[in-house]
Amino acid sequence: MANIVFGAPHIPPVDPAPAWSGMPMTWTAKGVTWPLTDRSTGIYLRPNVRGLGTITTERHASTSPALPGSRHEGVSVLDREVTWPIRIYCPDGSVAWMLRDRAFWEGMDPEDTGIWEVTHPDGAKRSLRLRFRDDSDHLRKKNPLKLGWDEYSINLVAEQPYWVGEPEVQSFKAPPPPQPFFEPNGPALVNIASSYSVENATIDNLGDVESCARWYIDGETTSASVGVNGVVVTVPFTVPYGQCLVIESDPENLGATLYDITVGGMNKKPSERIFGEDLINPVDKTRDLGENDFAPIPAGKQVPLSLTLVGTGVVECLLPSLYRRPW
Image (cartoon, rainbow, N blue to C red):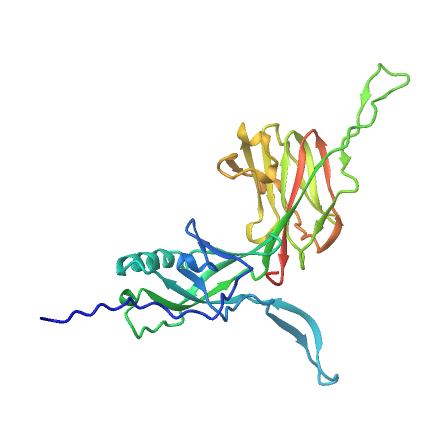
C-alpha cells in the first residue's frame, strides 16, 4: 500500500513587524483602490520604500575665472523617483493568486497614471500622482502559482513631484453697491458705479511652495477679474445665471471653460460640483479671455488676492496645497 504524505501549503516568510502601521496608504488606478499597508488584503508594501522623502533638485549656477566658487542662479525640481517593494499573497489556490496578481498589475500602465495616497494619524491626507516605469527586470526563482505569493520591486515616477494636500477654498461675493446717487437738478436718474472691488480678499496657501488656483465664477456677472498681486485674468463677457466659468491657471491645464449648472449642482458650492454630472455642456472660452497672465499664489497665510466682480454672482478660489514631503 502506497504511503500518502500531506504537506502544508507554502506560505511567504513573515516580516518581523508591519512596515507601515500607523500610516495607511492606498493606490488608486483604473478606478480601483488597493490598500498598500493592510496585510489582510494580500497586497502590502515591505520595508525600503523609496519616494517618501523630500524633493530632488538640480542647481543652476555660473562660474567665472575671475571669481572663486560659483554664483547661485536657482534650482530645478526633478521628477520624484518611487520604488515599492511589494508582496502579493493569496492562500486560496493558484487561480485565486493569479487573478489577484493580474488585477493589481492592470493598474500599472505606463500610458496612464494612478494616485498614491497616505493618511496621517490625525486623518489628513496627501497624495502623489504616479506613472509606472518597470518592475526592476523581475527575476523569478520559483513558480508563484504554486507558492501563492511573489515579491516585486516596482519603479514609478511622479512627474509632478510635490505631494498634494487638502485644498484651501474661499468664496467671495461683490459688496452691495453704494446708495444710488440722484442728480440734484436732474430727472432723478440713478448713477451706479460700474464695478466693485472685493476688498481684503485673501487666501491661505498652507503648502511649502507656490500653487496655481482654479477659479470658479458663478453667474450672474457682467465682468470679473481674478488674480494675485495685481496680476489678473479679466473676464470681459457676461456669465449668465445658471452657468459657471472655470478658469485653470495651472500651466499644465491652462484655459477657461463655461458650463451649464444642473439643478442638483445649483445647491452645491462651485468647487464641490462634479464635472460631467453637475457641470455639463462645456464651451471653451479661453480665446475670449485674450492675452492674460496667470500668476501662482505664493505660500503663506492670508495672501492678498486681486478680485473685481460686477453682478450678483460668486467667485470661488480652489488652491491645492503642495508639499515637499508626504507628512
